[in-house]
Length: 202
Image (cartoon, rainbow, N blue to C red; front, side):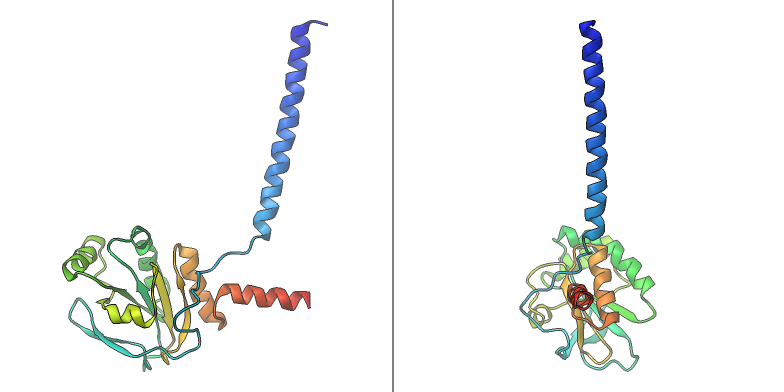
């Protein structure tokens, strides 16, 4: 046979084999994706535990209005405190998510942004990113009370001032996992999924 024809036939066979291998790998990736459970916000071992009463801390927002983090809220609403920083790139990337969540969860949740550091820098941060709609507090004791060591970090308190969810927030999914954990009454989505896994295998 013509050597050129033989080489072409071999190349086409190789192409077909490679195509089948790629299809098999794509299918396997799809199977693995279905098996991987979504990861919620990362909870740190230290700090206030979910289910404990949060400290009541009176503060003053940058706008000059007074507000209190913790304690009973007569309006029955929950409170999300999001710890951010003007020098945190992930915090800045999450600001649009916080703005949309503020509208989407307006029926039950208020959102407060918290930080510490230079007030001039904080005011510039608020102005640059259009955060005037959020109460914005600058308080080192607030971060210390929740032992915030990494940003961005969020906690959800219910209307009785009890910590219902907390964790490091790096994405919209992490933030929404806190909402879901609060709704389900669990410490985290990981705890819920682990408990669900044990109940189905028992």
